[in-house]
Image: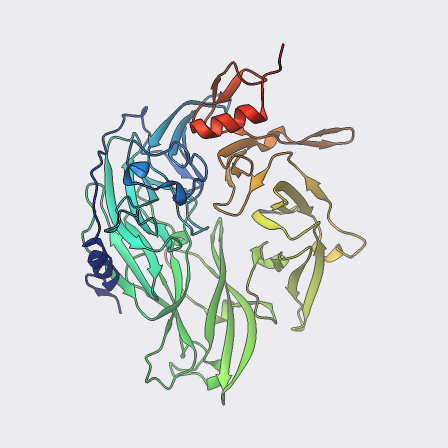
Amino acid sequence: MTKTKKIALILAVALVIGALLAGCQSYEWGPVGTTDGNADVVNNGSLAVQQGKYIYYVNGMDSTSNITKPEDNYFGKASVKGSIMKSEVAEDGSLINTEVVVPKMFYTGYTGGGIYIFGDWIYYVTPTTKTDNNGVVQVDYLEYYRTKTDGTETQQITMIEGSKVEYVFTDDALIYYTSNTLYKIGYTEDKVDKDATVIAETVSDVLFNHASTYKRGQSSISDYVYYTQSYESDSLLNGNKLYATDGGEPVLLADSKTYGTDGADAPKDKQFSYTLVNVANESDGVVVYYSKSSTVNGTSETAGTFAMKFSGEKPAFDAAKEVKVSLDALTSITHIGLDNGVLVASAADSYIYKMNADGTQKKIKIKFSAAPTVIRSEIAEDGITLYYVISNKLMKKVITDIDSITDDNQPVEINMSGAEVNATWLAPAFVGSKLFYIDNTYNYTFVVDLNDFKFEPNDVVLLEGKFASGYESSDKTEDGTIPKFMTDADKETYITNNPKEEE
């Protein structure tokens, strides 16, 4: 049952902050261009987000070790590396009129994080500028903020200890998970709640999700968070309970009665422990993957890995519609469409798992040149297109017929880029035909247009990335330009790497 109270975490933070020395910073900024707050938002919760004719993106990956004094991350004084940019999309698709809209370092150690836009606000995470009694900036405390999309107003939502706290912003609340508890802090267009709400305690597992496209004022089933909760310590029931919430009253999906009859508890071997594995959005709903196990007479048995597709306004578990995808308890899954099985891409020799009609399992080997980091799977009637990164290169593999794959008949692996793509932090973000990613050489955000790639006989054109935030003139480089929104130290490195030829 949901309980509202001042959360213990905030009290703990308050005790610490009592010993912190707070500095002063001004949030005056902008206006940065015009805004389009009623436009649809594309690719929310990622490195780069588009709203109408504007794209907002993080200008690279900076290190919190560079924040040695509070001013290093003061609003308006922070390094341009890691700040949030705003670019207008011109008619030809190029990015123009680029400016800094949030002059503060975006940072989270949660690789599923990113920036969000709802209406007139950008939502983001940044290291605190507060110090301890020795003057050390407490960068392991992250502050959660929102800033108007023209930069003119900024509000702090909360501060949380821990750089890897899992979170999601919705249009009316920040939801986050720490210390086995799921919390939310609500907000409206004008103000932020002072207190937090405990959504659930004794939580053992959480699977965050969000809709990548947002229409102002419209919620989606993709905005639900899934979690498991233990039974009370004195309970004689086995397993755990599976819930979903969008920040409101939790929805019970499955518990000890799910596989019972007439509302009674199921036999012990049907009282399951659920372990959440992955979630994927489809055009008509959400697919949640989970494994199940039961314990009888002290012995645990794996039931396998399953999927449930939810649609409509809110999730509702229907055991009759449960899909078994593997006999094994899988821990990592790439969604390729339930009719196609599931992909576990964790090594050079990876596998697609499919269940046969007789309940046996088929494992189809799919070969990569090395262990891939899959960043996108596109599912269409004519096949599945996988985009992934290997050795900092963007790769692609098209699977047209899964059942025809053999050791000697493998889908072709295509190298798409000469670019150095970093996929260890925020995942590369697809916005239309553009791909935004952190460059592995300079750790700034680069962009490529996938339409520029060619792979034809005697005509192969690899993608070469450019600094997303643009360039300015320079008489020190070989082509007469230098990245505009770059630190002085990084500009020196860039000049060294791209020197002007001596006459």
